[in-house]
Length: 128
Image (cartoon, rainbow, N blue to C red; front, side):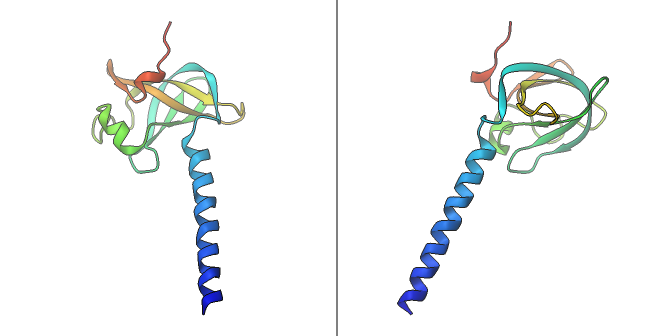
C-alpha cells in the first residue's frame, strides 16, 4: 500500500510539472516577437473563454489572424467584455506577432473598436 501511495504522489508531481511547463509556455510572451505591429480587419469570431479570450480577424491582404487577449479577468478589466464587439465589427489590434512567420497569430496589448480603446496590457504598449 505504501508503494502504491508513492506511485500516486510521483505521478501527481510529474503531471503537475508537465501542466506548469505547458501553462508557462502558453501564457508567456516567449513565442511572440519583440516588435509590435498593428493589425486591421473585420472580426469573424469572438471567444471570451479561457485560458485567453480570442478574436479571429479577417484582414484585407493577409487572411484570417488569431488575436489573443489577456486572461479573462485581465481582458474584462480593460473594459473588453462580452457584447462590446461582435462579428462584422472593424477592429485594430496592436500587439506582438508570433515569431513563426507562417503562423498568423498575435498577442494583443490594445484593441480598438469604433474608436474605443481597450488596453489589455497597458504597461506593454509601445507607440511612436
